[in-house]
Length: 119
Image (cartoon, rainbow, N blue to C red):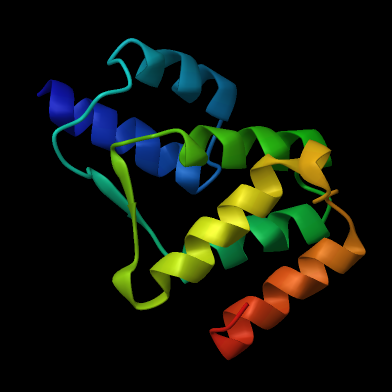
């Protein structure tokens, strides 16, 4: 049961559904460690969140927090086909202080990487 609830909350966070801060708080009660990936992040998941960002439904800070949550989880895996690209995109979004400021240039770079399957 706990595993199902954890998976449901993580999926809601990835989909940016409802109040993700509340979902993040709830997921934190399960801890960080996981013996398996409960949810797989896909190209479509990133495209969905970027659409929300471009439509100004979510802010730069919310996008950064979302990516930080994903980057640090052992229970979130990545779609095999584009794994390296997806990992790098999450890194870019989660680390604006490392030279990856969330702006039109970064979003364009991400769109290109997703479209061409290359960094």
